[in-house]
Length: 293
Image (cartoon, rainbow, N blue to C red; front, side, top):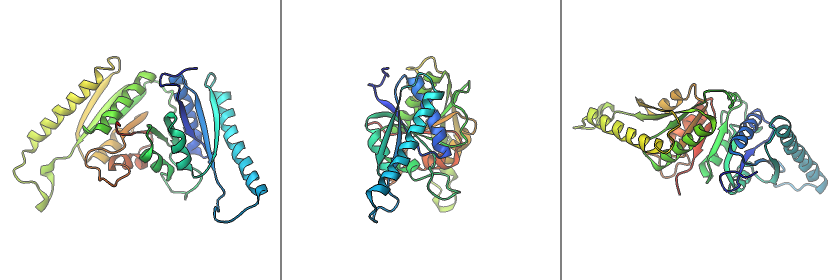
C-alpha cells in the first residue's frame, strides 16, 4: 500500500496511557485517510539507569514492553481494517526514541501525557519536546478528544504571517481535504495603542495599523486557499491577545493547527507562547508544524 508522501508512515507513540490510547485511534484513522502504513512505537528503559541490574531482570522488563506494543498493534488490526500496522520497540527515553523514528515518518502522533508525571499534569515532557524538535508535523491528542471521524470536521489554524504559520495553514488545508472538512483561519490583533502607561506607543494610528494587518492577513489566506478550491475557508480577525484568541477559537474545533513558533518568539524558546498555551489549554488535538526548511 503506497502513500502519497514517498512511502513514509504515520508514527504513533504508545504506552497504554489513556492519552496514548486516543492517539492510537487518531493515528490509525489518519493512516487510513492517507493510505499509508502505521508504525506503533513504544520506548522502554530501566527506571534506574545508574544501578546495574541482571540480564534476567532486563529481559523481563523488555518482555513487558514487547507485550505493550503488540497489544496496540493487535488493537489496530481488530478495529481498523485495511490499515497496515507494524510495531517498533526501542530502548531509551521516550522523546529521543520518537524523534529518531520521526526522521523516517511523515507525521508523528502522541498523547498529551504518558504514564509518568503527577496526576494533575496537563502536558507531559514528550508532548513538549517532540513538537519542539521534530522535523515532521506532530499531533498531540488529549484523552478526552472527540472522535475524528465525526461529520463536519472543523479545523482551526492560527496565522500571524510567519513562515511557520503559513506552513501550518497548508497542513490544515490538506487535512480538511482528507476529511471533507472546513478551515477557520484565525489572526489575533493586539492594539499597540492599548498598552498602558509609559509603555504606550506615541503617534500610533492604531486603526490604520489594524486595517493594514487585516488586509495582509486576507491576502495570505487567499493566496494559499487558491491551491485548495474545494475546501471551505472562513477567516476571523480578532482583537485579543493571541494565546487567548486561539484557545477560544478552538473550543468547538476538531483539530487546531499551529506553527512551532510565530512572530515575537524568543530565540531560545522551544515553542511559541501561543503553541504552549494551546497544548495546555485546548481540548481538541493540536498539530504543531515545523518552520519550512
